[in-house]
Length: 261
Length: 330
Image (cartoon, rainbow over all chains, first blue to last red; front, side, top):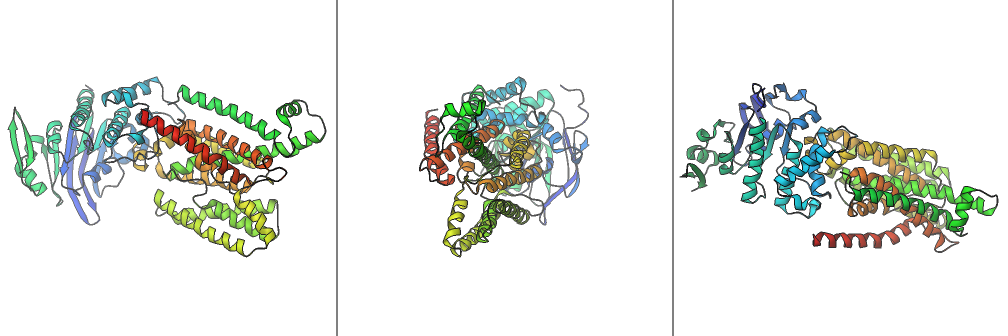
């Protein structure tokens, strides 16, 4: 556990986002404390990806502020940001050849001075990440020859190698079989809790969010949102309203599952 | 990450480079032989052999090495910049601009330095036209750059055809040689050596960032790369390297497209290995091709651009087949 738990990993202060003339949400005050995971849910086009891209400073805010580790987002250089923020994109570009190991090692890029080569420590981190994603056997394979799910695991391994303080995940379960969906989020969740990091994931998988997130941001698409503890936000009523489709909840062995009626 | 495999590859390429220089020094309409070449290099004796070696062979071999190195390095950069495996040094129309200017000079009956200076000017003009048209609000999309380059290229192509169809038979012959790429009149001065060294050093400093950029603009930005600045640097570096190569030898096809791919298929995907390997292999390959060009039908000479394709096509296809087999076996 780290001692400086007083500064949140990330804070948004009355953040508003619009695309064109459409308001995605207004006055969002979101706080990700050290050790916390937040899930962002909502219909297609409600701004989940846009929010993640705003948090990593790829697009400007319309109004409001974003603080990373207590400092304004614009106060960080691109490279400083890259040592603290890591993002898993919805889909990667893997048309140039590289091995799985080389791709995982790219996560070390922001940590290394321009002329430095990866040292044994960097390589050990990449190997460790490959092991976590069960990719050791594929380490020397060209990524262009891998399946979609394997590529997603390589992308996650690269993110783990980057060792960010805040994980931003856009559909982390994309292409993954159910075992790897759970496994990859468990690995990241463990790091978040043990090392006092933060995690924010945009997903369509309500059950995955229910299982791993402490807080939920539910975007309803009309500029409004619901934000709160997972069990408060993830109710059949809220979800049915947000998705415009009836969603039911079944309890089992102390947990519950959501499914469309 | 550099592995033992990479060290072995680079060492073999160094040996190949030395060997190619010797081949290039010794072959031509007067065959000197390795023994004579070594003897003359270590202990020059005045005479015909010494004259051929020092006044013809060595300058031409150096021109071939530098041109090959420039083209291969430019090809590596263009392929990352456009994130397109089909990209080559000429894809953005640089050689077209150079060709139009060079052909116009030939049409006017000028020769020698006039042609190469005009070619360089034409190349630079084309670089700035494409740059001006492709950029919108400081945004650089690979697709937009590629489309602009291809369209500008097509425009130059039309002008080349106009020049070819309206010229006298005599000048058409020299124009065709220029267009196919030819080293027989080539001398590479210290300027081109400087351009190659500077381009190489600059790209080695950015090599790790190139690895990241190959994964896409967004991923590169997320890993801390200033993408717009890097792309600007890549565009101008690749362009100047190409302009320089075109100025020395006209547009020699195939080297810039295929040398980087060959090396990637041989395992050099990391740009910190790929960049030096490309310069060495590109240079060696062009020296060998040029040696063929001037000895196969001696005393006649073939344009070296024809030979690069004749040697390169089967070699590349063999390597491609081999790597497919390896991938399916894994």
